[in-house]
Image (cartoon, rainbow, N blue to C red; front, side, top):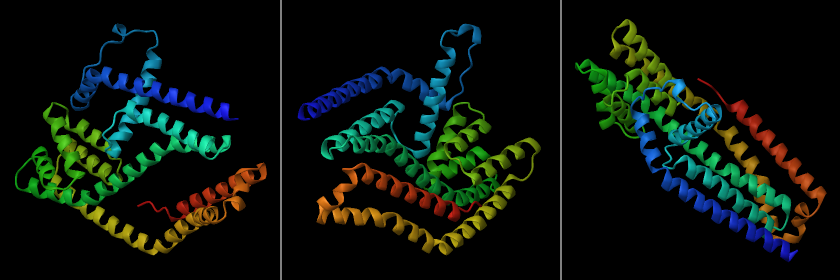
Length: 313
């Protein structure tokens, strides 16, 4: 058993070292491509004719490009300064680390598999957390940004000058996003495409309504400052209503957190006080079935409570 454990440890350390050198190679060799990708994010590039492209493997290459762009969009929404290759490398290394912890330290293959899955999904969960936190901050400052846009436009400035004022005066992430829109427009990108990129980085219903109003105003004309004021008033009422709903459901949400963490806390306390008593849960098939059934029931309860308390405005 000791020899098998040493083989597992040596294999995964060798895999980790190989992946580390592979990631360094991708980072070093992708410098030029990173510069081109960053420039293409700010300025449009002309599409080459299809006859000039290689036919072999074109569909596979397009799928890989779309997959990489999806990950890049997710990283941009979270404002996480890492590349796609670094993010994928973190997934692989954390998965290997979780597997080694479950297999070597806890001493069971199923716990190793659990650690592998936890390490695989941990970066995704962290990414979702950063995205939710950032979009909440963005929605919280959007109403004030629209009021400033309307006031600057009433003074005689255009939309681009108003967005530049917002990028200087408003706190991040609003200022960062509007500054990027101003840079994209300055590099030659049409304003409607720059606004579409803004919406892709910040999937907000309020921002979608604002950008739609700006596009319609550019097509048919009208008083854009007054339209922005009305949208800001609508957002203000929605934020007020959302705050009231959160206050009314605070007790239920707190109860859901307590009911979710209570079994885990009790299990840790029992493990610290009497490890032999609770270790039967991961040393027998019946124990694993009980753990799986408990985790499934807890997950079902969390999803049910989240669905009940999820209000869309």
